[in-house]
Structure formats: structure tokens, C-alpha cells
Image (cartoon, rainbow, N blue to C red; front, side, top):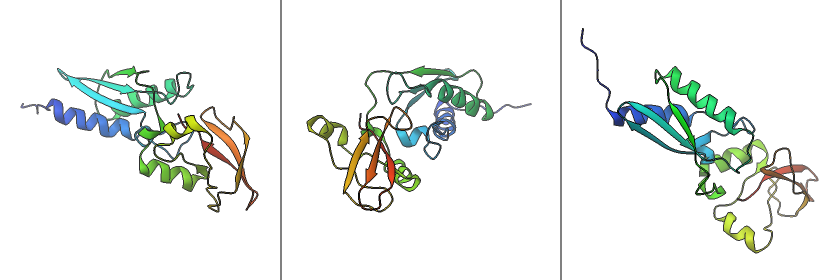
Length: 167
């Protein structure tokens, strides 16, 4: 019987593809790849290690994300993966994909603009309503439905909405 040998490069690609499909438990329309939480997959001697970075250091979803990555890899036949959490460099909204920003908006959450993590240091930006597109909006609370979101309201359509905060 001949067994196929899988190269480390093929194993890395399979592991990345599997991990990239894991959804964020707090925002289920986004994958961890969309968010930029999935940082790297390293394969050495057939062993897989996945590196993830939380959106902030106290993110309660990270344990669930790590478990879901392990399960996704196991379903792909990748046994005993190691999941490593990286706190540095700190995650930034600049790591979000354009597809992720689009998915947030379609879901009704105002996405951060690219580069907004740097601009946020110099005063509050105007957030466009994800429903009607108006920029006539106001901040209601720095704290939204999760720690990574703030609650805003549109003055045009009068609807409240979450805004994914800049980091």
C-alpha cells in the first residue's frame, strides 16, 4: 500500500483554508479571515500551528474561535493543531478585508473605514448610516451590543445602528 505524502506547503494551504472559514461568534456574517484575526499558519514537520490575534486583549470570543479552528482543522483530517494567540502587534481595523467591511454594512453594522484607526486618534470621524447612507448621525453610546461596537443613531432615517469601533 502506498500512502500519499502531503507537502508542508499543501498542508499549510489546507489548514489556512479551513481556519479562514471559521466565523466570528459575535458577528456571524464575518469570518476570522474577514476580520484579520487569522494571522498565520505555520507547518513544521507535518505539525500545524495557527496564529490568531484578538480584536482586543480581553475579547471573550477568542476561546470559542480557537475551539472552532481546532474543529475545522480536525474535519480536514489535520490532527492535534496548536492555536497560538498573538497580542503583538495589536489588532487594528486596518486588517479587516474589504469583503468584511462590505459584509458588515450589509448586516447593518457601520464598518470602520480603511485607515480609520489612525484618524480616530485625532477626533471623532463621522459615521455613515449603514441603512440609508446618511452621514447625519450621532453617537448614543461608546458601548454597543459587544465591546468592539458603539451605538449610533441616524438623524435622517432615525434608526439606531452599531458601529464597529476603530482600533
